[in-house]
Image (cartoon, each protein chain N blue to C red):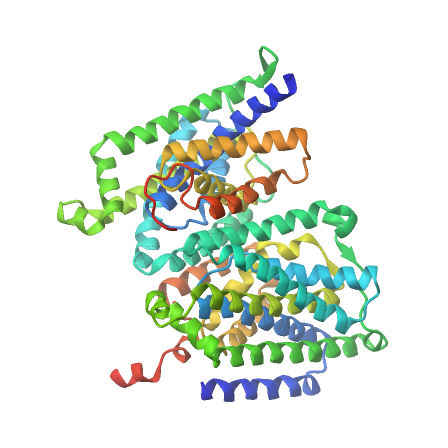
Length: 314
Length: 290
């Protein structure tokens, strides 16, 4: 855990200093995407890596956060810190409602019902035209004035730093969570549900708290995304975001703190690098997912999650 | 009244189609307990290959159907041997991730090869309307419904009446006991997955002559098939049929009387309700807690 903390601090330092050296719009854009993905991956990792369930509809909270921010900003002209906070709060509320229903189920049923919720939300975003502008989406979401007044490089760099702060916040929350009683209870549950129950851990309650925390983080990320891209459409609920989240968490290593940092960096850079290949790129990603599941199910950083005692035996 | 009858008829027809497209998943998810997210892609491949055989190579529908079934069965058997068997005892999550990876790979490879253009499987049945009292159906739909029914009955008989079917049921009830009784369970797994894949491919070809086959619809097919399987209860063919009919009729009635915008959401709503009220499905025999 200590090693992970040091690595994370190093990463933060590099993240803070990077824009001073890389004075380039395109690189800053990639930097923003990495920060956004780190938030998403950290959020998903809380559930996949610590509760041990697999929410295939996690984009529900991304979309709720994005739509909340877009609506508040476009309809009420709310400033950005209000919309991002509101995005997190709405994400959390939906997390509470959806988690309360879905966490009663386990395994494949949990997977499918969370996916059903995300699909229902996508259909609502698509059909409730008076509120969401339907499939056309909502464009022209305002950027804060102090960002708008800068040049393109300045804008990207500002968003990069906002993203860095938010990603650091998400990781801080995850770190505090994992090292709290709550996180230990969650890990105990993941490892052996019956034993955990026998020592007084109530799986539903702990699962729900984790679910809500993850949903709040995902809502923040969605709101950030809405302001950065300044467009929100029903596809934020779609499966493609889900696929990249899964791949990032898997590649990085679920159940570790630095996995959801390493994974997004690798995947975002790869995605940009392979952009010319279009569908072939996604085919390759499909193969990567299968290869990881078969050959290296714990991901690149999986060794971090192993306990020191296990090394002693080897 | 006439409208209601027409809607019911449409619902029944669509419901049969749903049942057929979910049949493979009933085997793979309901019996083998592999949460197969690549099911929709297998359906799509069946449809696209069916189009290539009828439209490009000029074979007739039944010939193409036979080729698709054999080809998909072999492909499914290989997938089980090479991929699924490696994660067999690692719980459900590994299988879920593996099939998601497979579905991403298959969907995008299909896009790469066939493009996004919708393709239609050429069918020998005429599309002229058939009047049954106040209800109008096209002839091709009626024929495909009959074919669907035949396929469903054949699959049911295979599982209930043949030694192979008995071996399958034994293996999925208790693998160790089945092994002790001399059943080669690994072969049974491979065969079941191949059979499920073949059924999905056959559904794709048949329904590709009614609707269209398109590389991008796999995800929706997977989801609807899961809805059907869960509504009917795991692992029972009767359940899949009832689940399909419920979904088809509810969608038709909702689309006819309420609004067409949310038709696709009906199934998801039903599943959420279902798992809250009766988590074992309508027709599941065992009262195992899910």
